[in-house]
Length: 562
Image (cartoon, rainbow, N blue to C red; front, side, top):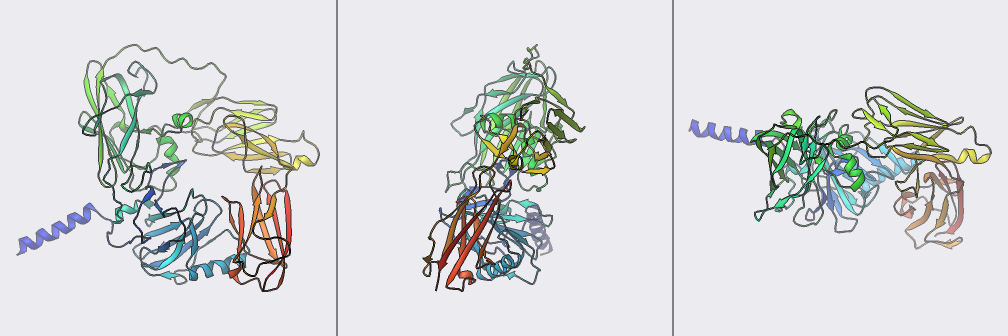
């Protein structure tokens, strides 16, 4: 009896040790089959994806449920990013996040609108007290939408731990059908030390993949010498969607011993920017493809790396035979395997000749000031991951600061002296980044102090002065001046600014502030008459829109409503 009892206790303890995440605590936030357009920690621009993107059949308005008991601890409404988002803190210490929402449940919506009218702003961030907005498991808290930086209707769902680190929600039992192995598209080799080479090359080399009938991959035998590393392009897909999503685990071995493990289980927001150090950023700049490097370069602090030997770098000696293997897994354990046979051969390889150009040497651990004519560039210490040589020149009002093919982990400061400019146009100047092919100028957030324009940026590339003398445009969408709008639910106005963009706007009705929600994707301001603030028959609508250099436009119209 005792032996059986202790065996049961051991089995329970073992299972808990194997999976420390509660499996029956969090329920699905939607009552439809979960189909993903984005998986946890997949590679995005400048960050790892912090949750699951759940498809909503191309529509908005699906009921969104609290995944467990708790209270609304944070509400954020922004034109960009998560759009309308709710954060619910749960008794077990975890927080769930629901983003890109169309609207909140009536109780939460009323609380938010009261705050918006009090503060006279659409965008806000609130931190309600624990007793203010309590919710029960499976209670409707919102409706799915397409707000903020969303690329289409879906629900972004996260689970965060007590330290606000996002974790893969699938660890907690959310089930997504997936019976498909990840796909490995491309393989690259990297010589990493003086004298090292792969297939006669001393720089990145593409290695041909051979897919076998059983679904595994191999390569022909490669030749190499010295310290080398590998990188792969890989994605996964689930059963009900064609989206190319991220993988869950990458493991590599060298001659049977563990080389490196990349575990996409959890990360922190303060390290997500280092994705640009994990991928081959230069290759991404040229091709928009992300090679995941299976070796850890200097100053890469990502904690996704586990159980590595010598940072995943392998050493190939002369006259040896070795085998490097890679295993790529999705969350459901579907796996793709790759085998790379390596023949060690030492030989002299001609070095790749550097392009002849005048470059500025940047010591990563030191602060650097680059200056020419009216332009200064302040590069703070540890802005770059390692020492680099970059191009720097100023021609007229254009700063040429290398190519944007080297990642930065800190912003640098660009200053333009505009004292030579005269007249009223001087106040309309801004710093803009020049598109890669030179055919477009993008506004970079610019501050003016006296005769100095300042911008902060994490991107190399070309920057120049632009001028924005155009006022924002404002146009009524669903009404005309002196219209009767008694049967209308919404009042819609389009606002736009083609050069520096809309900085802020203010709408009033008969002199009182009214809430108009701003959708940047459609450039639409919308007022909901159900707010109940329109009580007069005759109404004078006034909207003032200001762009990022201070140009303002005013729109006025009269409408009637019973």
